[in-house]
Image 1 (cartoon, helix red, strand yellow):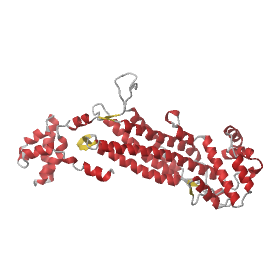
Image 2 (image 1 turned 120 degrees about the horizontal axis):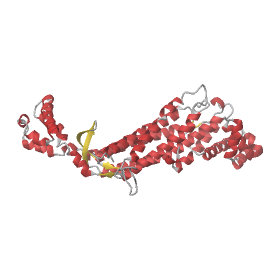
Image 3 (image 1 turned 180 degrees about the horizontal axis):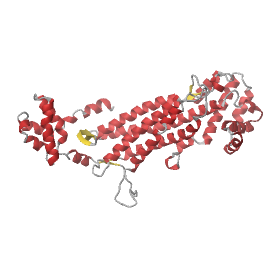
Image 4 (image 1 turned 120 degrees about the vertical axis):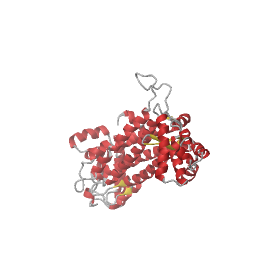
Length: 430
């Protein structure tokens, strides 16, 4: 991932030094358990734990000859262990180390992602409650519909991200798997107790049946969950972008004192953070299909998945981490303009009350079709002539025969269409 989107905590997890550090710990744990059950001498396990170390440059140099990264790693570490090195990587195969390490790295990054997602959820809840009663126009198809509150709008994102948190927790469990089962997964050369031991020590689950690799449906599930999360991030970002349009301006991203919006137009205050998140979300979702395709391996294993994961796993998790941190900043620092919300709400002269008027006519005994026709005629006159809806209704003779003027005025001036906002927040957003 380019430095622009890297954060140190998660970048460190995917560093080559951390990868080899995890490999070494796995190898030490394997030797440790093998010594306990008598497969290798106890002295060998102690030597491996004490002397095992690696040199990245040396490994890279050896790999140029071996064309095999794990063999290069084994050869390098064995040099430091000495005589006991013959028991290093004893009875296991490359995938045992690579896949278990990959599980641990995915788990570590997922936990960072989870922490950032939780922060977004927490701040969305705070903002939802703060703007619970801030009335604004609701829109469908981009067109004015009926009033909602900004707090209610934010609460829909609060629950959406909460669902992502639940899914992420399941995905973390799904990918947190250890497989130490030897060539083609038969445990022919390694005692099954070793896998359980290493899993427990690394706080991973012990794989059921691994073939020679951990089945990639687990990883596909994880990346599909990140894809859903990315779409939720984008949905929020697109909402901010739409609400920040000059002619709307109901909310706005924070704009710092020395920030610049354009090289040519000094007045510009663009929603660049939200736009950036839209782009990053597209990139995160791009991992879903390759992760699904990685499920399909030949027989007990091949390495068609390997190159994809080496690129995809670090970059997609880094991008997701960055996106959530940026999203949280937008939520915390969001500027909200209630006066503009009120202005936009009244822009169409009260047309957002058409539904309530129609319901009143139905209540008075009219068929739905006739009630709709009567109200729509007044609504279209209001729309086309830029008049006040109440004024047009009061002059509608057909309507006046059924509803008294004072009742029309009462409906127009009423906030009853938001009477259940308190109930929603009391019963749903606890």
